[in-house]
Structures are given as C-alpha cells and as structure tokens.
Length: 336
Image (cartoon, rainbow, N blue to C red; front, side, top):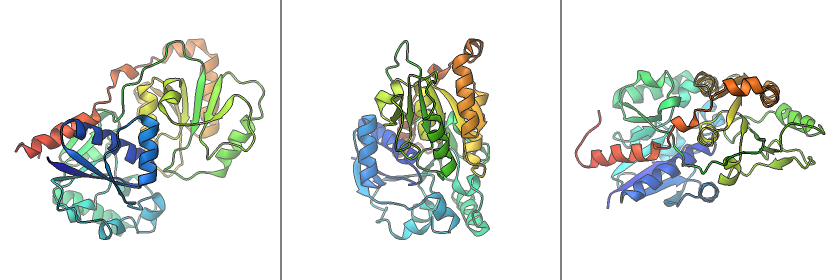
C-alpha cells in the first residue's frame, strides 16, 4: 500500500481540518495517510466533524503568526522525522518542506510570506526562491485562490474542503460570532460581545459565540460555539473573521457571511472581498459594522430577496480532487 505524509501548519485549526478531509479521501482510495499535527487538536476536530482519523504523528510545526514574524517558522524542518520513507508528502502552506522533499506537493490559498506584514525580507526572498526553484504542484480551493498564488506555475484549483451537510428547512434565526484560532484576539472584540450581551431584545433566536469572546455572564440567547455539525447545520448568519475553515463550513451550510478582520492580514482582506464578490456575504472590516449589517439584514426583507444564496453551487470535492491527482502521479502521470 502506498502512503503519504500530510504536514499541517499550526496557525489555527483550519489547516488541520483541511488535511483531515484530504486524509479521508486517501483512505477511501487505499493510500495510508500519516498526519503530522498536534494530536489533541486533531482528535478534537475529528470528533467535531465526524472525520475518521488517519495515523496521527504528534508534531507541532510551530508556525503561528508570531513565529513567522520572529523568524522561527522554518525551524520545524530540523525537528521532523525522516520524510524519505513516504511515497509522497503534502504540506499545508509550509513551503520549507521542499528543502526536505523537493517533490512535495503544497496546499493552500495563499502563502505566509505574501499574506502577512512584518515578515523579514530575508524570509520572503527564501520562500520565493524555493517556489521558483522547485516549481511544486500547488492545490488550492478554486474560489479562494489568491491572485498572487496564480502567478506561480502548477497551481491546481480544486473544490472546497468539507463535507455535505443535511441542511435544515425553516431554520431559526441563529447567528455565530467567531474570531478563529489563527489570528490576534483584540480585547475590544471581547468587550463588544460583552456589550451586546446586555441587550434584552435582539432579532436572533440564538447567538453562538467563540469561547475567546464569550463573557463570563451572558443571556439565555447567547451560547458557547461548539463548531460542530449540529451548530453549522442550524446556522443562518456567520459574523466571522474569514479564515478558510469557518468560511467553508458557513458556505456549505448556506449561512450569510459578515466578515471582519485585522488590518494587516492580506489573506483575510482578500477572502472577505471574494465572499462579497460572489454574493455570499458582506465585507464589513470591523466587528461592530458586521454586527450592524447582520441586524439590518435580518430586519430588511427587501435585502433578503436580493441576496441570493448560491451555496449549492459549491461542492466539497477538494479532498477527492487532491487524492486523485496525487494517485495518478503514483501511476506515472506527472502533473507539471
């Protein structure tokens, strides 16, 4: 049996989640996946989304935003085990894998050296040099592929990385407020949520809130966000920082997205613009504006009619698309 190493960037849960969906596709095609990621988080996500786990190798690449800014984000290549025993290697967002495996495949809608401010130019030049020298095959969800990424060779645009949800009819007016795990959590966002928790009347039946923003005391209509299938299947409005993981789940469940994000994160800005451009939500920039827009949307029937839900146009085929291409490579069909 062939095998493949899947290496996760550990800035947020979306990268691990994506590789979990990809691992399922490989297992269905009799290829054994080994996922290099923090075991505790991997098991948590597998349980939340009902994903059968691959073989987990407990490993943290330590590639959070601060690691990129402090110049430590490449250190993981000196700590990971020998990758030569794997038939293939797929790395999520981490270009440095090419130093260890020049034939590695990459996955992502952007790269860190192009999506964040404050990264050393030495690191930026090194990352660009690796891409230009090795010309790796890159998988990216078609609707979120960044313009910068498309400048590189061998970019394969694939479907979304997720699952088919059993969407509920006649949904209650439920909303989600979430920052995600990969960004900087500003205190003012938590304060904003605390302030809205004091309101007695809101147009939502339930507002699920990310634990990092949830106040110590909150009303009956506010609940801790579990980020599981049950929550997403009953979600109508997503007031979120538009990381790929949460955005994908929102799209696949038909929720209207109200995006907010930090000023210096180019990935978040581009994702928000894409969401608005394809008529799946609004680019609000700040949490306060996102909340006001959501309230306006709930109360404005004319606006509801003009905002067409086209989530059914997107299929979660990304995992299968990736597995098929790599397996064809095993069989002698090269993608260059």
